[in-house]
Length: 416
Image 1: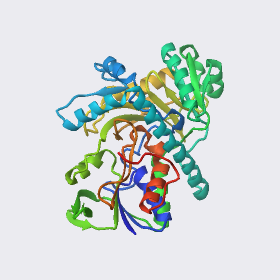
Image 2: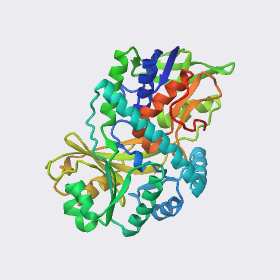
Image 3: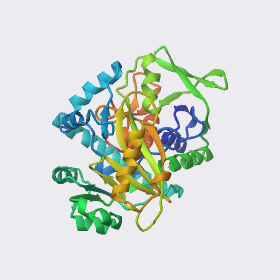
Image 4: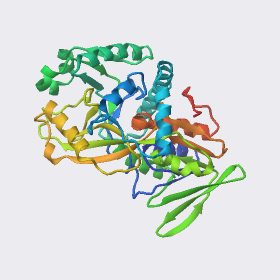
């Protein structure tokens, strides 16, 4: 079957890999000059299965109100005259109900566990390298009340079979000695030894090459203008390249355009509950190997992650719901490096940081939209929010099974 995939981020590239391995004729269309240059480019680097909890939870509305006047707030709503934003916000509040949060955790955990296992199998089969480390994720706390909540949350997550262990300050520093200078600030930690980290961009680029070697085509520098629907099916996609437009046709189509997915599906009557959550990152050259963390870290108070990627530290976090702008906000950029410098003062060349921002495609529930649509030859793989890297391999593998009329190995709720 001929399959046209729209988008060459980590999600679209994983989908292309698995479809190609199943014998389909796959073409991937991407507006940028290479794979992984949008939201996959400089994310936090964590495969964070055991911390895969939704933003929408009973504590979220109160925290958002506390942060509403802070320009460096971890989660910031900038209200706009935007019906999609208001609709998303109302649905987000509904997902904060305890019963909805529990159900969403269950769905997220199932897909995340499957995806991590799929990534490990892919790595073993191909030998792909992407600055990966299998040292777990350590989540440290500087606020006693937040640590108390974390202890309760760890108990909940263990009920789903996840290995989130509560650690003392001494235990946390044994796991990651680079925390020693900040010992006096830390009140406790949780550790998930089975989680991983790695460079999502490097993975995406190298997997795209492997997919091409297996027969997939990646066509870059092509802007996707429109999806055409006719007689109850998708009949093609208009693509612009070098000032010329053409309608590309296939037997099946996959929308894997991240935050931009709703802009292409809305004109054909598919109103996806996906809204961009703008995230920031800083890539900092390591100055002293012995002072820089190797275990991937999550700083609860700042809501940031710190991940070793080769000779760099990737510091990433925050979420800003303010539309499709990718302009850098200096205050939010500086907040990342300032916090990292406070905790690891001698680890990096913070003055040489490279800043980046990307738009995470977020659903109100944090449960992605994966599977078929009312158009029998149109499929979706979008809405992964902060967990696109965590869920990428499993999402691509499961959707490839669905397109091939196979039952996915993971019991996940595909309908939106």
